[in-house]
Image (cartoon, rainbow, N blue to C red; front, side):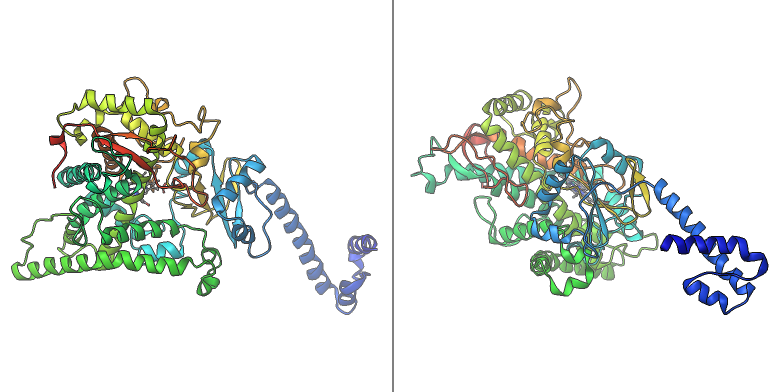
Length: 568
Ligand code: HEM
């Protein structure tokens, strides 16, 4: 029936046009029988044009690359139902890509295309070849809180604010001269780490423990590594280790525990697939409860930071008002941020920008070094021959009559290979920070629409069997390459440590120094073994993130002469 109508329509158009009499059926027929030839011409011509346009659009669509493979999205919500029911999202995505046997996928959340990638060649296409297109970040509830409305560099979308803060941080805050200036503060915290672990080994409340052997104790390595990272960055930013009274043994007080705990909570929720990030209208319902937790955690962080920053701003401004130019020399990074001036002598950063950027640098520094070293220690205790090699290297390069210094790092290649292996095999998070595209483009032959969130999969890359032999084995030797100095960065994206490109980490030197020092001092200062009564360290990964499921507890005994341990 339909076919007949169509053929009647076309033949009528072709054959009868000259006479001005047109016989067609349906609505067109009705319209045409009641009007005259000009109207009929316009009507039929527009239908013809429509069909021509429709056909050419179809052809174009056929030519245009398709989206990467992925689960069929539901109308409007996309794959949010799967996201909600198959937690944690990253394990669902890993499983999905394995089942689909693909290195790149497309998952739709609301109207956003999420593009996970686990192949280094495709990763390089995103962050090297087309880096400029993928240099933005998503707008999320979590990053809005952490950055006081996208004021700080790490999470700001592409634009003037990001450019301003990136310039400030890269050229004024974390540059090589500044890092040299801050060396003493970092060394203080490396000494404090050794002191803290040593004090535990010697502590009298461990005396009745079966693990005590000529001064030794079971140490919570997670607490030690997180405290070290927190202490270093607090010292660099605020020139203080402790917010409160601290502890005489060098360990974290209640304030530092609360601070570091809140930092980790914020970090876990920055890009946590919160439903409202994809359907903003639902934000008031806080369906996954993320906003409530984020609000509380940032409140804690800000409470600690703001008191100090407000006070410092006041000191600097008071001094400027009194002497017309600052008499003070900066003592730490907050001073640096406050004292930055443009060429008219006006402060470059507002108080909110100073606060947001300080917090941003603290978030950026605290989690990676501590997690990598906790994992490296756990893996190495289970393979004591690796521990032995690393310690032999330290003894050869540094000896036993001084503690490791940053100037030793170029020669500590085995130690750095262990840290690098920890970044490969045990990244802090399942994905790199998301990169958002600012135009439509094609990558690896697939269409990637403007606004897509590209997620380089840290485990997918670092544990990729096409790239790494025995990918699940902790084997630092794979990073040793004759005489070349080992670095922790991996710009070819065969795994993610500091990433690369416009949004690559600005803290490569500082992050590498913190991680290497943390591992080297723990290895130099102490013999590490499995606690009494256990045969191995349990290397199970947590199900909802990539941390060791149980914080590493290991038995430590001092291995240097007593006078080498920094005193209280
Ligand atoms: C071992 C320690 C560290 C690791 C593994 C690490 C890793 C990373 C990674 C993977 C990114 C995201 C790159 C991308 O989007 O492609 C990043 C960004 C960033 N990191 Fe680090 N980081 C470390 C330490 C630090 C430190 C100590 C600082 C500064 C104090 C820092 C500051 C930043 C900043 C500001 C960004 C954002 C850059 C931007 O978006 O323009 N990081 N880092």
